[in-house]
Length: 297
Image (cartoon, rainbow, N blue to C red; front, side, top):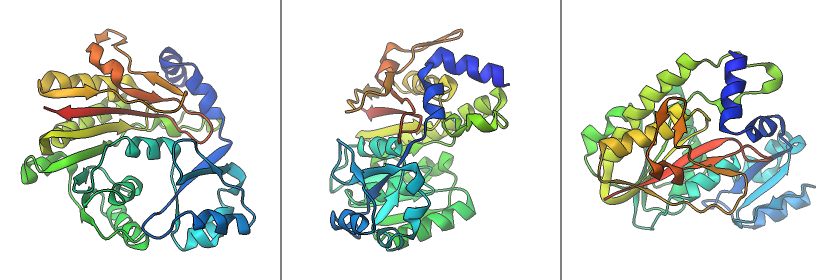
């Protein structure tokens, strides 16, 4: 299986393998329900030297050696900062949220993106089917002071049947084969093509639910933390074919470790519109990520 994995990754982009080996930094953001920039001053007093990212005043990186240590810092224990990957943060920030919006986060645990949405939106509905993850997520929201998040222990595939076209914005960070989290030095132990195909089927069902729950004129983001086109571009192409009123929107990210969507993979050809999707290549504090912004006309 290792050979197949490496062959596929090299076909998508050889830079991915370099990025998977290179983890020098981690990232965190200020939890604006509880703090502002003073949290950074507090960290500096404790001896840390956080580096601000160019695209946000509230997102910072630190060397990977500080990752465990920072969990004992006052800003962390007081929930003033939230450790979260840069790719995840930048994707969540790419959903254009207005202060009156009602946002659906369809596979929400552990809840980091819902917390970002709750800083901007009027109301957030966070859905998570796994009971243990659901209760951990609920506690996460309480500890971080988010009072405008409703939580639901439900299977996201069927949410639209209960809601209809209710939400202004939807974010679906779908369960996936998690190729971005493979540690190459430990070997490719749990990955296989069967797993990729199984997740692709589940993701299509969740995408239908996400799109059906979206108001006309609303926008959604479909995302995964995996590289396989079967779980990414193929699913976006599937949505376009199923819903003529689905439109892929351009996303302009202020980073250079990105690749446009792939329109051909093995024996499959996808809509040219799929090019507008974004694949974030792993680099420094950015992990591998794929996302696509979709409007419902």
